[in-house]
Amino acid sequence: EPEVTQTPSHQVTQMGQEVILRCVPISNHLYFYWYRQILGQKVEFLVSFYNNEISEKSEIFDDQFSVERPDGSNFTLKIRSTKLEDSAMYFCASSADLETQYFGPGTRLLVL
Amino acid sequence: GENVEQHPSTLSVQEGDSAVIKCTYSDSASNYFPWYKQELGKRPQLIIDIRSNVGEKKDQRIAVTLNKTAKHFSLHITETQPEDSAVYFCAASIQAGNQFYFGTGTSLTVIP
Image (cartoon, rainbow over the protein chains, first blue to last red):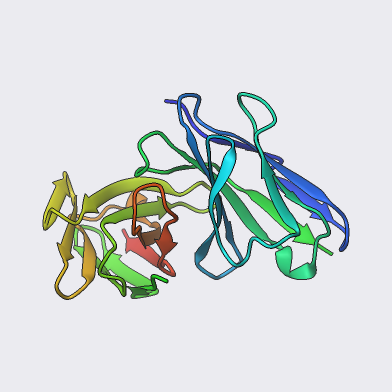
């Protein structure tokens, strides 16, 4: 069964550094999402992406964040200048039907 | 925006007993309610979902009920097994393709 994949599984970075989190959505899906989960808290929406543009974004998704679909398979989340509070698990999700979202295994980001 | 509350935060049941997890939502426009199961270190997996035009849906030992008037929905697991032990998240979506608003999660432990 096709699954969403994410790399890396873990990322440690220094505050102020840029990080890029990568996702490969399920191949026939057209809708893509990023969520994050700070340890012990609920999963929070960051951004959704369709037809090569952002569909919706949350207050968390400020100018430090950007998303890109650089080719036909990858979907990336970039954090330009990481802050301590960006430490979280980041989940990518994709959907074929605008309802069911399939989640990747997550990237655990630790900002020191 | 939408606010989803989930209770209880932890739940322990004896193997074979039933488990019930409850969620409430605030926005009457929400029309899609998925439930995800997340085992330790793994991705959230969709286990069942319900749409606002349906009051109940069942899939083997798992069922979900929705009360639109009261704005709450519940997950019912019957004949629980140790492998049901995981964190369960409810979510609500206002419009197809839009973000999911997640509950805070319920850690279910099934005691053999």
